[in-house]
Amino acid sequence: MNISTSFQPDTFSSMTKSNIASTLLNRGVGFQNQFKFFEELLGATEAKYPPYDLLSTDEDEYELRFAVAGFKKSDIDVSLANGVLTITGSKEAENADAYFHKGIATRNFTQTFPLAEFVEVTSAEMEDGILTIKLKRELPDELQPKKIKIK
Figure 1 (spheres, rainbow, N blue to C red):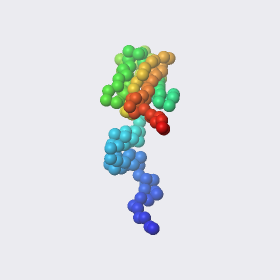
Figure 2 (tube, rainbow, N blue to C red; figure 1 turned 135 degrees about the horizontal axis):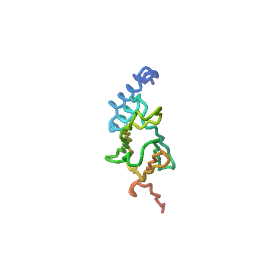
Figure 3 (cartoon, rainbow, N blue to C red; figure 1 turned 120 degrees about the horizontal axis):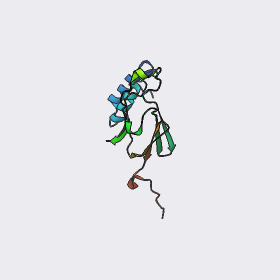
Figure 4 (spheres, one colour; figure 1 turned 30 degrees about the horizontal axis):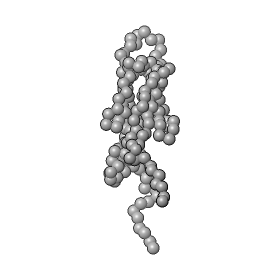
């Protein structure tokens, strides 16, 4: 039996990352939001400010840690709307003439993170120039796996 396909093993090797994401976006049914996210992610070439870590602390718990040296708690806003976590920092400009050298960046920023379904922010803390946002995925009871007893 001979199965003919138009897919060639090196099909994706000649495409750019952005083209791959666009191809997936145009061919995925019901996955547009996920593919759009990857298209934006792969298409981004500039470094994000401020630097951050995203880590898993348990099976359904996560932390986002931002290096925000030079910012006060009052300079930072953390909000969640329509499944998108937004972190914004704004600081009033300081007198540049007072510095001999300024190496600590304090430019304004906005970072957004689309959250998966059932992921909620549980807390946000700032200590020693690190903003830590804790997230947890909690399935509703009706979606939890259930053990069925055999009679």
